[in-house]
Length: 493
Image 1 (cartoon, rainbow, N blue to C red):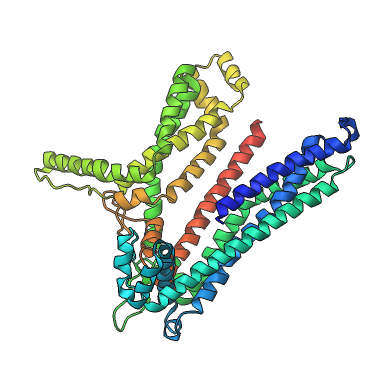
Image 2 (spheres, rainbow, N blue to C red):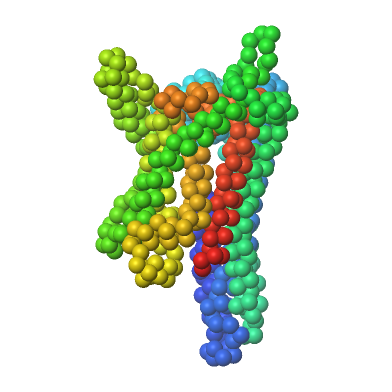
């Protein structure tokens, strides 16, 4: 039985239990609601929860644990020469076994026997069924695949039987517990309270898990490469060095950090004036009709995938700046040589700034409109013009919140990847010319984790050191921004 079908059956049992719980409460109270401690809906909800939650927890635990047990049992069937191979080779072999296991149900018994006699024919047989196998199979893989399918089927059958039995037993027990004075509402609300607590804890647990996973691997990297060489190094060359040199390459963070901050700074130079002026216009000058039209159109920019911005930079903005610089150079010197490269800091900064405009404008607009109306009326009543009121009253009052919004936007810019890959290149170097390419921390994280890799060398583990560094930077920006925003709210709410 598939997991989806099992889940559907459990929902049906829960629905039936809900109806039976309501009916039993009504029967025991003889139709008098005043005789019940809780409303009839709570009795039905209690029975449904007892019938649904325990088997649901069982299914979740089973699905989390059973793959490890089954995979271990299947791996034990491998020949000794395969068990003696490296972990990566065993993983590739097990991946092949899983692929064959998915395709075995497509074959008839005669085809299975024929493939066992000649494993090299597996690819052609599967190809005839419209199922692709990347590599040539070995004889033991067929037996292991059959074992994997058999154990998986047994696991699903046992899980379905236990879950359905537990659901039925839970419904029966809950119905026996239901009495007119049973505090069903308290039990249901307690369950909902725990559900809300679990939902609110997911973000915290996820953050803790991310930090723990990155920190563990980063410590492995720092055990091979000294921390001072990483944080204060000025050369990024993670390739294995030649004979007689260091075998771990050079992992200087400074060029990547400089590129990250430089591109982010250019992006903020573009996004802050445009976004802030747009927010001032929409909050103070635009009519309600214009605001209802302009703000959604501006925020459409926030919904465009970043890869689209990257293509826009690569195909349009970069070539435009390159050709424009060539024309300017030709007019000034007669030499039509471009001094702006298509992939450069300014290209990535302009396009990233366009992407950040809706973040700045939307956050700033909300902050400006939150300034008390009394401040505007008092300034205008004293004879100030609208522009003077905005410059001398509204913006100073909203400044802490705007600064917090800009810091949050900066953390968004620091974490951008796709635009930088396509618009600024992957050259890790230190320079101040905005017309030359640079790269960022996020781009190098992607580069170091691209391809079939083992997380055993500094070349791959450095990605986690970069990740934890970037996490600390953005976390510091967000904490400081939240501090400023909270200070603003305490002052003006």
